[in-house]
Image 1: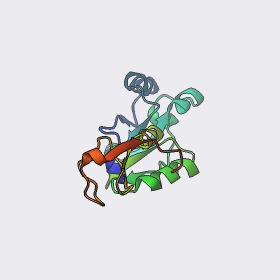
Image 2 (image 1 turned 120 degrees about the horizontal axis):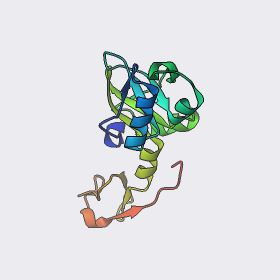
Image 3 (image 1 turned 120 degrees about the vertical axis):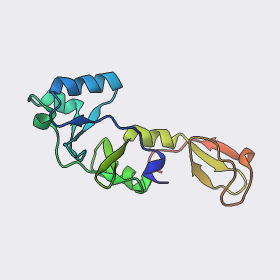
Image 4 (image 1 turned 90 degrees about the vertical axis):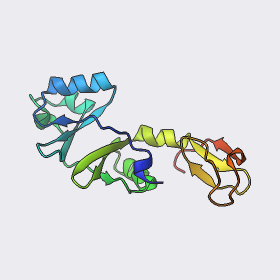
Length: 155
């Protein structure tokens, strides 16, 4: 499964010159815990999280953002993102299409995916999808052959 299938869009972002109170308002209004920070060209140059707002002082996003953001592309495998989130102990990664921000994948997106695995009762083929598949890609059985199965963490 690819990141483009589970990423959150559209992405709430903020410009580097957004005031810290403006960033705080974005987080509170949209019930999110961080926001990518973009420059005049729309390129992601940092990230401001709740932690940054609480622990750092400054007037703008530029002053308190965490630079050096790790990002992925739309075609990155979801498993690679899971490993990245676990190994680097980060909570979210921006999704880029060239220089443009097109989505974001967070730990909660992956947790939601874990709860949405469908398994074909005929051949055992697992499918990660929000909706029950129409047909099994392996054995061709119709949708009534699928049951939803909970995934243990880390699988």
